[in-house]
Length: 581
Image (cartoon, rainbow, N blue to C red; front, side, top):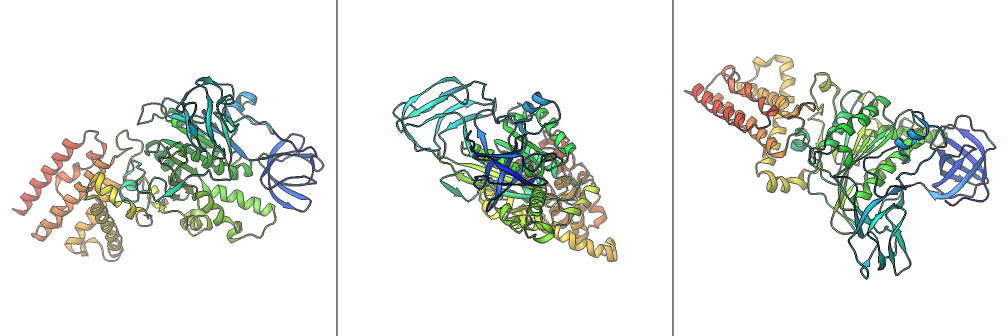
């Protein structure tokens, strides 16, 4: 590590923001602050004054203590061993810190992000004499039972012909390849977190990120490489929804960032994830997951850094050709960290005290999502799903509004739905997806030509119900025309049978596209038979009272549901035929 020979002097301390004088530094250099060598980052240079945000508590440090510049920017270690790890916001492995000092992290303690002593079995995929370029895959390591780690030439390398390539068991620091350009590389590389990793080309997303959640896959899908926001008040189910997405989405790698969340919520994640089984492989879900835990009682500056750490890890696996899902819970806490640092810097505040650059910072983060052609060829994606925690559930506040201008999927959580025990508590009237036009061809070809028509019909019924309920509140349901009474019942079935999903039921927790399509058709079939019977003069009370309708919920909770579905269809046909007789 480079160290500036002449340290600066601490001049001023204002919470996580300190000022040093006579420090030779550049923007975003990592520095060591005080006698305890607290890690910090240069965020402003004003003449002789260098302003630093410190990633640890500054309690007890005093003016006059030394500040040493490392000459390096904040970077993460990338290589085998990332998966299954639990880090804090600046990539310090929490399990290593616990071994060093117990349950309470002392200040100034550091640990490398990767295990530099463990040996990995490296299998080359290039040979002596081959020409390699920046970003090219040169070998493979079986990182976990679920994931094959692809070792790459660093993106900034010159490249050249291979003069030596080693196979065998190595640590991440040992050289595995040498080039005629004089360059040689180990399995590990470093990358500054604030700089996006390069790629060849970004493509328009055209494949959905399948989540197994009916309301998301069926009505408001997100594309692989897309962006989504989950805003909602306290207790509406943001964290549970993101955990469902982490467990069931068809992304190959999951990066979960607990950015400023409460300690008890993060504890649930840290204890539950290692115990969860990956439904695809039967192995632990942690074998394809990286967790970043930065709770609300941790230093505020590290919270700001944690999202950059997470997105850089996601881009690294994207560059191998994997589909990565990144969960940021929550970007509101990240924005609050920026607001606090903004006030410490005495900058001009924007709306509600947030910095004027809030929108640009959110854009920089979400724009690092995408479906791209990596330097190694093929394709890889990073899908970013950010939770937003608006105070009091007010979606008009700055973080929510600025996020909505950027993301293309909006899953609006509703406290009223959660109080009615409707989960996921996603409001179908406020939510939307702007990826539908890009995904229509996928659903037509891979699922059914009926899918898009059924989805449009479902949304039409739910919109109609909202209008009718306003009338019902004024004049009562009996005053509605008979056809509208049936519409109200069909909408109730959509809400209770389709939109509600039990995340704790072993069967209903995940619903694939064929089953979702069958549930679409089941409800549409009932509606068509009911409207036909009403036109034939059958009273609504008899139409709504058919027995086979009450058996429909069994489809949700039955693994082999086809016999149940066939029985329901046969029952409906027989009962409606009898009503029309």
